[in-house]
Length: 215
Image (tube, rainbow, N blue to C red; front, side, top):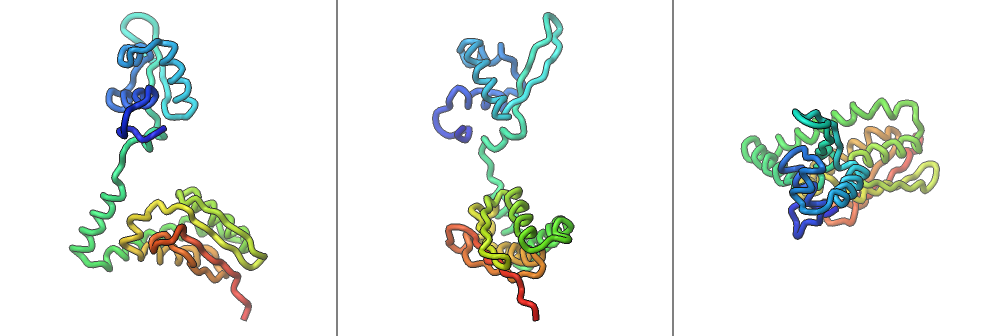
């Protein structure tokens, strides 16, 4: 489904728009708003429920039988315009203007340390292969669209095909440095090097991971 608010709305998009602007609605409400048949509305509702974009609950009425009303789920939030990156950049710029660039870097350092603390336990007792796999899963959960490749038992490649904070990282590249340091911390006895960076014009962020040679 295309993002709501862009171009001509389809019937399904219009249903989502109505639920966003008017709140919970019944089949009868939607039929009256859309000017189409009850059967057609039910068909669209079933598809939206299958996609987990809407949910229903039964409510009692002052007269007549209880009726089902439909509302948007959290999953539907991604269909509407957001300006998180713009707001984040504005806040970081304001912080930098008032307290200097070091204040912004301290924020990224704090975030890195919290993430290291959060995920460190999941790495305990694992060999390098399992640590790389665990790291790939962590980054996928955070929206980085990760692919990883095992060259041999001591060498791996991680590719991040998406960066959820790309606009921020492009301007404040200390975020990229913190990600590299986080990887080094979580992977333990490995040498980690970034060979390609989205924020520096690369197609993706690519990391070379090699087991440290014993001294």
